[in-house]
Length: 362
Image 1: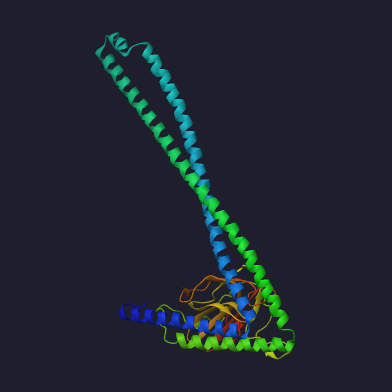
Image 2: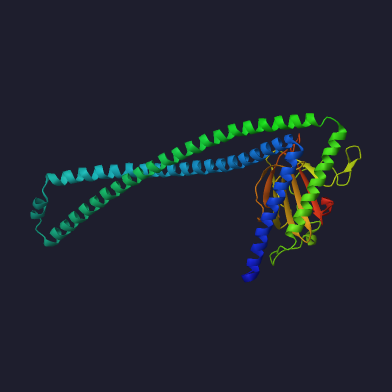
């Protein structure tokens, strides 16, 4: 990795990148809002859905961890309760023995011994007996103290779990509301694009905006340094994993929309929420909503290569983060106004699309 002045320079360039990407995203969002209020509504609804789903997933993980902690605490309590019961039984036995000894005074027992060695052994026995009894009582008190502390922790964990569960229910209710808002926006958007000509016009506009975004990003990342151990993207040609398993719904370059356009990537249908993984080492340079692409993730792999992941349900990485092959970066969805959940995936070099099947292994 870079060090010293080189590292400072790299950090400075990264800050410039983040600022530039933020500006680009803002301009595109602003343009979309001016051109179509319905797109703005869709963007807001899908961004909110993505945020809520990430928060819900995090809360569900926290609830699982709390339940595991509670089960562990309850198991500890069971062990301590068994130890307490055993100690109670031993203390009862010790008290009975002490009572029996009390019936014949220690002094009387000792005076009845004629042999000094026998007296010494008796004294040693009494000392051992009382010491053992004191240790037993002390252990019993310690067990009771641990049980009390454990009960407090269990009560605290139960309270925390109840709070997390209430938050989760609230988040799920918000998800339902946000989903309804999105569906309404999609219906209204579909109604506004009532003809194939309008659909084609919309898709051409989306394509121009995406390519404008890619060109701006390429300019912003041109001078970014990469780690010393970086493996060039082109050296992994044909050996990279697909971003997720599944049968592709189309082939790269095939006609679409009555031959007026061609596929520049591939669509991979998958269950909503399925994790999408980066195909190669790189840096996230875009993670936001874009008209026509929905929640979009773009990873820059250096040397002019980028991979694009569109129509996500949620984005798991932020701009500036490094990822490696197999890193989860998003989840499959149908954002951007799509009816079916699927990942739309592209690989581009110098801004131009290239066939993903030539890069990813089957």
